[in-house]
Amino acid sequence: MRRRKGDVAADRAVYEAIRQALLMGRLQPGTKLREAALGRLLKVSRERVRKALHRLVHEGWLEAVPNRGTFVPMLSNEEVREIYDVRAMLEGAIVRRLAAEYEPEAARRLKAHIGEERFAIRTDDRGRLFDLAGEFHVLLAELCHNEQLMKMLRGVLNRATMHFSLAAPQSFHNCAGPHDHGDIVKAILARDGRKASKLMLDHLMGLVEMQVAWEPPPSPPTLEEAFRRMPKK
Amino acid sequence: MRRRKGDVAADRAVYEAIRQALLMGRLQPGTKLREAALGRLLKVSRERVRKALHRLVHEGWLEAVPNRGTFVPMLSNEEVREIYDVRAMLEGAIVRRLAAEYEPEAARRLKAHIGEERFAIRTDDRGRLFDLAGEFHVLLAELCHNEQLMKMLRGVLNRATMHFSLAAPQSFHNCAGPHDHGDIVKAILARDGRKASKLMLDHLMGLVEMQVAWEPPPSPPTLEEAFRRMPKK
DNA sequence: AGCTTTCATAATGTGCACATTACGCCAAAG
DNA sequence: CTTTGGCGTAATGTGCACATTATGAAAGCT
Image (cartoon, rainbow over all chains, first blue to last red; front, side, top):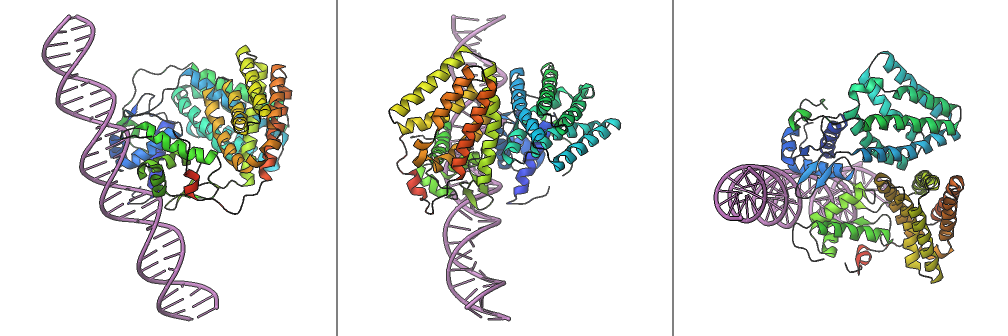
């Protein structure tokens, strides 16, 4: 990550670093992200941090208060429900469409994904399973061949994931998520759009109920430990 | 618009000015938006224009090419179809929900809106009708009481409107849009979600077919005339 | 004549210094 | 003891100057 000047990759690196920290749940809601401090920690100029923060704010990852700073948003349970409500609308329509417009290539990729999830469960690879569980929903959108849809769904998915990673890691294994995925794919392959849609709705409902049941811990970690020892590259 | 310093309203003014120009169809696809020129035209510093442009890019209004500049995107017919595809998913789900969860307040506002549209048609008020036609779809989302959904739908609606305003103004009167709106509301009030959904899909399908049939004119207007004589305030 | 290269110009991108604003502490009054 | 006012500090926000990059045209080469 040793860039000099005029490098668009540097912008992306800063953006990704903060985004990853959010996704990983290393930044507790309410944390204030100071530009100068982040610049020192990430070894980049303050302006670069500033630009990245602005972008993250525009994309809904962070909240900016004028002349105050940028903060990790604290999602209320109401907002979490709203996010999953939108997901239900979009993803319900997605699986219904996939069931209606059967494509061999789509079927192949769905089966392959479920296979990977099963493997991750068998080998008890939590990290991999965590990633796969998120990618499953992206995959569904991807199979609709609609860039606009992809972008839009990614937005809500990211926000949902951010909150999820705070609420779920400890109890993730108990979550019936991956098993649901298999059933949904089965319904799609059986071309039963109604059933697939209902299964998806139930799946999302289960996730949201788990997340709203979660209570935030009292002691938020500091900025330094959230950015300490990020994965190299 | 006489601001001195540290004014967040100035940012918004610049942002809105460019956004309005896009929405009004005064900026042809492919137009290059130079920061210095815009700063002179809008009487603000270049940095302010820069920030507004960045925001518009993030929100999907404009496209930025590194070290080249910012451009009005030319939407391909494929992209227009994708946008309307997403709208069909979202708005289909919206009307189905509204039909399922009947609320007196919602019914009142829907009826009132249709009344306004009818009045605009009777008095042949094109401008008003144009606005109302767009607001109708926002209203539907608003009645779902979901901020996330609102934001998301606004995004696609804006892009659709931008393209629409280029393709439609001349033939808007021929468009069966407003009449469709009345039928959709009727189906919602009758609590027939399936019918409302189908009518919405047909409505959107009609719009997209009109827009993809449109061919861009050969002579794009300049930056200066697009921003000349903007509505004061 | 066609193609490549070079150079001038004009735009964008970046870092820096300064202006502005908000927060927190401390003291004094009620 | 509580509250309110003022002031110092530290953060954000803005404008400016300069570095960097792309483009277009003209000149040189094959």
